[in-house]
Length: 299
Image (cartoon, rainbow, N blue to C red):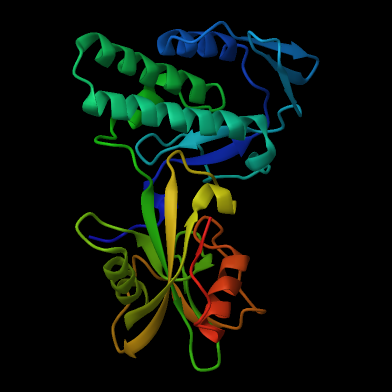
C-alpha cells in the first residue's frame, strides 16, 4: 500500500473570492451555547469584521479577501483541481479554519472518551456545528463536512508526512515529478500505521525513485500550516524531513507515483509541488548535507 501524497488523500482547501456568510453569527452562537460559553456577538462595520466579547474588548481584523473551499476526494466539487487565490495565513478565513480544526479535535476526543450520554450528544452537536462553521468559509455543504469529520476515529492527532533529502556527490538533490500535477518534490508521503517514520521514508524512496536508502539524520519536524504550504489541508500535518544515503540502486520506480526523476542544483530547481515541499526546506536539507553537525529543527 502506497503512502500517497497529501493532496491526493487528505481534504484540501482551495480558495475562491467571496465574503463570509451572515450565517456565521448563528453558528458561533450555537457553538458557544454547546460549549456553555458566555454571550458573544459578531458585528460588521462596512467590510471590517469586529469581535466584541462580554468584557467589551474588541479585536479588529482586515476585511476578508478569500474564502477557503474544502475539497475531499470522496466529495469532488471543484472542476480543474485546486486554485489558490490568496494567502490564507493572513486572512480571517485562516483563523476560522484554525478554530474549526480545534473544535473538530475537541468533538472527536470527546466522542472517543466520553461516557455520559448527554455529553456524547453535546460533542456530536459540536461536531455538526463545526461542519457548519467550516461551511461558512467553503462551498462544501455542512452535511458533507460532517461526514468527513465523523469519518475520523480515536484521539485526534496530526497526520504524519515524511520527506527524503537525497543528494549526489555534487550536492544535487533528488526530486520526483508527480504524474498528476507534473510538479516536483523529494520522495515522500504519508506514514502508514505500524511503521516508523524512518521505515516510511525508506519505502517512499524505493517506490518513487527505485533507490534503496538509509536514513542518516532527522533534519526537521515541522508543522505544515506553520510552514505555509499551499493549498491548506483540513487536518493538521506533521512533516518529518530525513537526510538519506543511497546504498543501492537499480530498482524500478512505480509509474503511478513517478513521471520522471531528476537531480537538481538547489539554485536551479524545477517548479515545486508546494503542498509537499518549499524552496527554503530544500535549502535546509542541503545545509544539513553540507554540515551534518547541525542540530535538528522544529517549530
